[in-house]
Length: 177
Figure 1 (cartoon, rainbow, N blue to C red):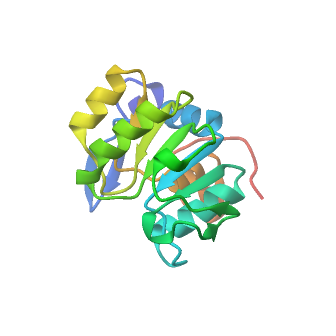
Figure 2: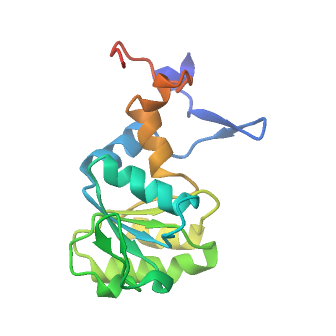
Protein backbone atom coordinates (compact mmCIF):
# COMPACT_ATOMS: atom_id res chain seq x y z
CA UNK A 1 0.00 0.00 0.00
CA UNK A 2 2.86 2.42 0.67
CA UNK A 3 4.00 2.02 -2.95
CA UNK A 4 0.64 3.28 -4.22
CA UNK A 5 0.76 6.34 -1.96
CA UNK A 6 4.18 7.31 -3.31
CA UNK A 7 5.92 6.81 0.05
CA UNK A 8 7.98 3.94 -1.32
CA UNK A 9 9.46 3.60 -4.80
CA UNK A 10 7.68 1.11 -7.08
CA UNK A 11 9.13 -2.38 -7.11
CA UNK A 12 9.22 -4.74 -10.04
CA UNK A 13 10.03 -8.44 -10.04
CA UNK A 14 12.73 -9.71 -12.37
CA UNK A 15 14.20 -13.16 -12.30
CA UNK A 16 12.42 -13.78 -9.00
CA UNK A 17 14.06 -10.77 -7.32
CA UNK A 18 12.46 -7.50 -6.31
CA UNK A 19 14.10 -4.48 -7.94
CA UNK A 20 13.43 -0.82 -7.29
CA UNK A 21 12.26 0.91 -10.45
CA UNK A 22 13.97 4.25 -11.14
CA UNK A 23 11.08 5.41 -13.36
CA UNK A 24 7.67 6.35 -12.09
CA UNK A 25 4.59 5.46 -14.07
CA UNK A 26 3.85 9.19 -14.39
CA UNK A 27 7.31 9.83 -15.90
CA UNK A 28 6.94 7.01 -18.46
CA UNK A 29 3.32 7.89 -19.27
CA UNK A 30 4.30 11.54 -19.88
CA UNK A 31 7.04 10.49 -22.31
CA UNK A 32 4.76 8.12 -24.20
CA UNK A 33 1.93 10.69 -24.44
CA UNK A 34 4.04 13.60 -25.69
CA UNK A 35 6.12 11.58 -28.17
CA UNK A 36 4.96 11.58 -31.79
CA UNK A 37 8.09 10.69 -33.81
CA UNK A 38 10.54 7.96 -32.82
CA UNK A 39 13.88 7.26 -34.51
CA UNK A 40 14.48 3.56 -33.89
CA UNK A 41 18.21 2.84 -34.14
CA UNK A 42 19.05 -0.79 -34.84
CA UNK A 43 15.76 -1.82 -36.44
CA UNK A 44 15.66 -5.20 -38.16
CA UNK A 45 13.72 -6.22 -41.26
CA UNK A 46 13.34 -9.69 -39.73
CA UNK A 47 9.77 -9.87 -38.33
CA UNK A 48 10.76 -12.18 -35.47
CA UNK A 49 13.36 -9.74 -34.10
CA UNK A 50 12.26 -7.57 -31.18
CA UNK A 51 13.28 -4.34 -32.90
CA UNK A 52 10.95 -5.17 -35.79
CA UNK A 53 7.85 -5.99 -33.79
CA UNK A 54 8.42 -3.11 -31.37
CA UNK A 55 8.66 -0.69 -34.31
CA UNK A 56 5.60 -2.21 -35.97
CA UNK A 57 3.59 -2.07 -32.73
CA UNK A 58 4.53 1.56 -32.02
CA UNK A 59 3.55 2.48 -35.58
CA UNK A 60 0.17 0.82 -35.10
CA UNK A 61 -0.33 2.92 -31.97
CA UNK A 62 0.02 6.16 -33.92
CA UNK A 63 3.72 6.93 -33.56
CA UNK A 64 5.73 7.76 -36.65
CA UNK A 65 8.66 5.32 -36.50
CA UNK A 66 11.77 6.26 -38.48
CA UNK A 67 13.91 3.12 -38.98
CA UNK A 68 17.72 3.41 -38.74
CA UNK A 69 20.08 0.61 -39.75
CA UNK A 70 22.91 0.81 -42.31
CA UNK A 71 22.35 -2.84 -43.30
CA UNK A 72 18.84 -2.00 -44.59
CA UNK A 73 19.41 1.58 -45.83
CA UNK A 74 17.15 2.43 -48.74
CA UNK A 75 14.62 -0.33 -48.00
CA UNK A 76 11.12 0.48 -46.81
CA UNK A 77 9.93 -0.65 -43.39
CA UNK A 78 6.65 0.42 -41.77
CA UNK A 79 6.01 2.86 -44.60
CA UNK A 80 9.30 4.71 -44.05
CA UNK A 81 12.63 4.54 -45.88
CA UNK A 82 15.34 3.02 -43.70
CA UNK A 83 18.24 5.43 -43.15
CA UNK A 84 21.83 4.39 -42.48
CA UNK A 85 22.27 6.77 -39.55
CA UNK A 86 20.56 9.57 -37.66
CA UNK A 87 22.24 12.32 -39.69
CA UNK A 88 20.23 11.26 -42.77
CA UNK A 89 16.90 12.07 -41.11
CA UNK A 90 15.19 15.26 -42.15
CA UNK A 91 12.09 14.93 -39.93
CA UNK A 92 11.97 16.29 -36.39
CA UNK A 93 12.45 13.56 -33.79
CA UNK A 94 10.93 13.47 -30.29
CA UNK A 95 12.54 10.25 -29.07
CA UNK A 96 15.48 8.05 -30.07
CA UNK A 97 14.93 4.38 -29.18
CA UNK A 98 18.22 2.46 -29.12
CA UNK A 99 18.32 -1.23 -30.06
CA UNK A 100 22.10 -1.49 -30.09
CA UNK A 101 24.76 -2.72 -27.67
CA UNK A 102 25.49 -0.49 -24.70
CA UNK A 103 28.92 0.42 -26.11
CA UNK A 104 27.21 2.14 -29.07
CA UNK A 105 25.03 4.38 -26.88
CA UNK A 106 27.42 7.35 -26.36
CA UNK A 107 27.88 8.01 -30.08
CA UNK A 108 24.19 7.53 -30.90
CA UNK A 109 23.04 9.75 -28.03
CA UNK A 110 25.58 12.47 -28.84
CA UNK A 111 24.49 12.50 -32.50
CA UNK A 112 20.82 12.64 -31.49
CA UNK A 113 21.33 15.49 -29.01
CA UNK A 114 23.29 17.46 -31.62
CA UNK A 115 21.03 16.79 -34.62
CA UNK A 116 17.48 17.12 -33.30
CA UNK A 117 16.34 20.34 -31.65
CA UNK A 118 12.94 18.78 -30.85
CA UNK A 119 14.46 15.71 -29.15
CA UNK A 120 13.17 15.19 -25.62
CA UNK A 121 13.90 11.53 -24.83
CA UNK A 122 16.69 9.00 -25.24
CA UNK A 123 15.28 5.51 -24.63
CA UNK A 124 17.45 2.39 -24.34
CA UNK A 125 15.89 -1.03 -24.80
CA UNK A 126 16.12 -4.06 -22.50
CA UNK A 127 19.74 -4.91 -21.81
CA UNK A 128 20.94 -1.53 -23.06
CA UNK A 129 22.25 0.98 -20.58
CA UNK A 130 25.02 3.52 -20.31
CA UNK A 131 24.99 5.43 -17.00
CA UNK A 132 27.62 7.98 -18.05
CA UNK A 133 25.67 8.94 -21.16
CA UNK A 134 22.45 9.10 -19.13
CA UNK A 135 24.04 11.59 -16.72
CA UNK A 136 25.28 13.77 -19.60
CA UNK A 137 21.92 13.71 -21.40
CA UNK A 138 19.94 14.45 -18.23
CA UNK A 139 22.27 17.34 -17.43
CA UNK A 140 21.44 18.75 -20.87
CA UNK A 141 17.72 18.51 -20.10
CA UNK A 142 16.79 15.28 -21.86
CA UNK A 143 14.70 12.52 -20.33
CA UNK A 144 16.52 9.19 -20.33
CA UNK A 145 15.11 5.69 -19.93
CA UNK A 146 17.44 2.69 -19.74
CA UNK A 147 16.79 -1.05 -19.86
CA UNK A 148 13.07 -0.68 -20.68
CA UNK A 149 10.86 -1.26 -23.71
CA UNK A 150 8.40 1.43 -24.85
CA UNK A 151 6.10 -1.25 -26.30
CA UNK A 152 5.80 -3.04 -22.97
CA UNK A 153 5.48 0.20 -21.02
CA UNK A 154 2.77 1.41 -23.41
CA UNK A 155 0.85 -1.84 -23.00
CA UNK A 156 1.25 -1.76 -19.23
CA UNK A 157 0.39 1.90 -18.73
CA UNK A 158 -2.47 2.20 -21.22
CA UNK A 159 -4.37 -0.97 -20.35
CA UNK A 160 -3.46 -3.40 -23.09
CA UNK A 161 -1.82 -5.94 -20.79
CA UNK A 162 -4.94 -6.06 -18.59
CA UNK A 163 -6.87 -7.44 -21.58
CA UNK A 164 -4.61 -10.48 -21.44
CA UNK A 165 -5.20 -10.95 -17.71
CA UNK A 166 -1.87 -9.52 -16.53
CA UNK A 167 -1.71 -7.70 -13.22
CA UNK A 168 -0.13 -4.40 -14.24
CA UNK A 169 -0.17 -2.91 -10.75
CA UNK A 170 -2.35 -0.07 -12.04
CA UNK A 171 -5.75 0.38 -10.46
CA UNK A 172 -8.35 1.77 -12.85
CA UNK A 173 -12.11 1.94 -13.05
CA UNK A 174 -11.82 2.02 -16.84
CA UNK A 175 -13.30 -1.12 -18.35
CA UNK A 176 -11.08 -2.40 -21.12
CA UNK A 177 -12.86 -4.68 -23.59
